[in-house]
Length: 170
Image (cartoon, rainbow, N blue to C red; front, side, top):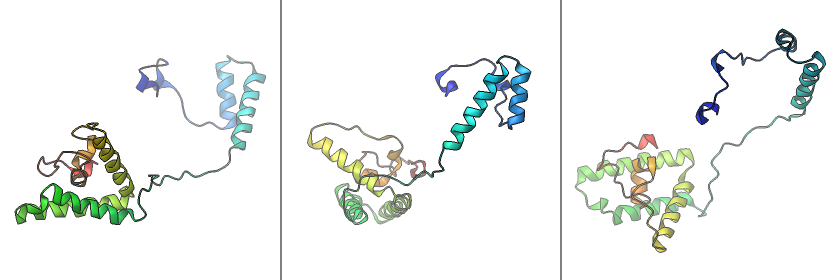
């Protein structure tokens, strides 16, 4: 955090930030001789008291996207198919069409595996809303420009195959 802010405490690389046993910690305070013994012993005691009060917990790191549809996967497929027609991908020569369809399958499987189908549907919903209010959302959205599905859903205006963009970066 300090480095990100451009702040420093001086020669931080020389700081000893390793965990210490109680005895090692007391020895370090005694070696510094900067704080009265009763003060650092009380501080160590209070730190241990606080640490003992912390209950174990686990973080739920699963995706937490709003669910706009009862069957998100079905709606996602429908919107992709609508996008294929709207973008004219279905009218491409066979070899090009095959490349697009293979990429759509790869991306779909990735979105499903990562649990981000609801996220993509949310993004589509937001972009569609912007257009109804004459708010221009911009040509692209960062790394999602590498997603052909984002292009088919009109989340971006970037045809990632045409522009040779990599989906795996997303």
